[in-house]
Length: 370
Image (tube, rainbow, N blue to C red; front, side, top):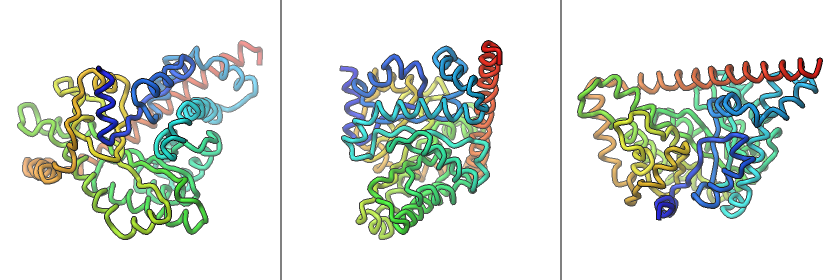
């Protein structure tokens, strides 16, 4: 009975992805079980996920870390080797889904070094290196939607590499992402790539918007908890308008796949809110929702899909954002703060991961007398 709730969500057009990955989940068959039993059709990772995986589960990585240490691999290349190994394995687990969906789902994301978020050329080079390192057709390379990331998105798609655009908080930046995506497909076509083999999603962050806006509103405001879902719904309207236009129609005629909106940061931060709200209130056809396992479990247990909860709510979403503006909330400042914080949080997680891995490499070399 409980799995029926995930089946209902999937049938409503939402691709269920897991926002988590670690070596233990792969070796135990846990990921494969979620794919077979819980309608999971994709995986996303980020620097925080890998930092948690490797610091909290060092034993699962010990053999590979030992071998890297003996080979004298530096910590930068070691972290690429370790994370690419996990992502490659997850890609293999999801390969049947990738084949069954014509390459739309069955995808696994790996993010460029977050320290490169403000460096266009380095992001492009890193994206190419990650694609080569994972070496699976169903990998997605995550590139942040910073101003500097936008031309990198176009260039990487233009090279025939599938992209997950991440850290999108504002509707205005999302418009720029959509333009970068279309330009990338046009470049890919000019470069002779098969557009049907290129996939992209745009990761629009949800819960963090409520966290920031609610803090500014203060306790007792009737507008608490209204910002994030309204913001995502207006973003979807922007997407719907664009894919109804002639520029997309021309690319679709050449076999291109649409860049689906992906709802990220869907774990509820405020315990007073319903723990499935960032899933069941963002349901429509052809979207992705990537969830931490706790949110997936909550949806399986009591998440009720009640039909399309986005398209019929466009007007109400605009009204909600207008009400926030009237209450003194500067949404432009909100999303600017969230982007800077998002990049910084991933940089901190990455540096902590590098430090932990360097310590493990040093210990392995010392144990081997090297």
